[in-house]
Image (tube, rainbow, N blue to C red; front, side):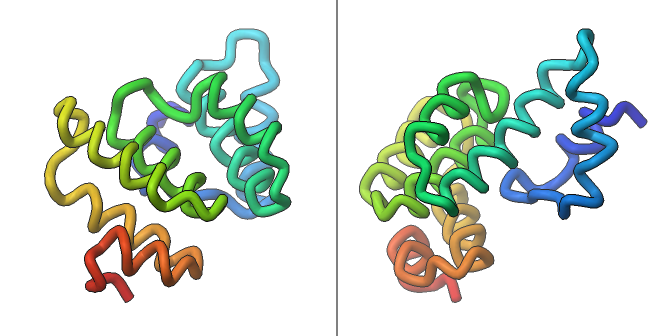
Length: 134
């Protein structure tokens, strides 16, 4: 299976362990690395930068692209990064735009809430999921 397709079949918020990431990182360093793989690697790096609260780095990676533009995958990732930063209102805006523009359906807030809950962002999960995500 194409490595990028394998990654795209995973949950949008998923990130590999360092050991799991190693072969993909090597592939991403190749001159002809597929853009989808590069976006996945940027997502992993953006999430780690957010955990370190390195917001300029997060912004630069997000600007370069963390997923195919205007997709649910991108919306979930951007919303999760906003929640990590404490900007749940910005996350809600990203989710609302994705739903309004047809990139996702009405279940997107619940999926973002579930991702937040998995990351230990309880308040964001409750707000995004209307109190139902635990």
